[in-house]
Image 1: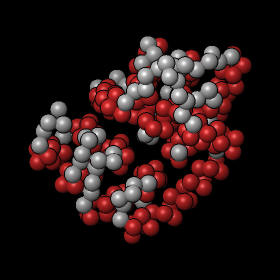
Image 2: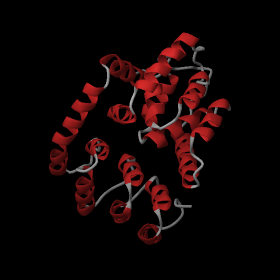
Image 3: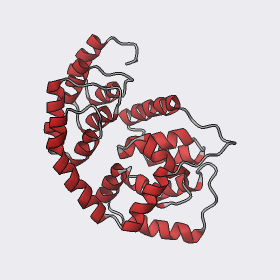
Length: 253
């Protein structure tokens, strides 16, 4: 719906409608400054996160200033904001120290071995010739479905568990991306990796329970079966990992 509505009408919608509408609008392929200004003004955490991660979104000078003001109170938003190449240098400098402190605390809170495995998993893409790779458009459509599911209260352990059982690889990745607040580009290599640690952190960051996490692990495309011992070790690490550390860790990468 949002793709065919003129910007001037979307600005009016953004002024009056609730957060689910703002979330959908923030994921448009292109979000011009007059529209993004309204989203920044009225959007809550999920809207701002999606908007900042949208490379097709542009911001006015006032919009950038408003985002920085909100990012001073939200470490995760600050991390996402400074990663944008189009951010004004002066405002980027304001947030640099904050993000640096956040990264240091997160790294200190995450075991070094786990940090290394997550970085290695994200850096290594597994090529499987027999399995056609989903396109960016596939993930974009899936993320829109997740937004609609979330709006109606249907994006939860039960639905994600079903995606995993039915081997809906794209929907599993999109759900983890949406729920954890990080990009699909980070999530996909973690699902494909033979190492479990990164995927475990992503599932914890997405607030999924261990039963759903196990189902995702067991239904990864092209991955070897996991032994009971490996699952036991992963469950222990999953239970010991706090939600805040998982969310900060996954967003660093």
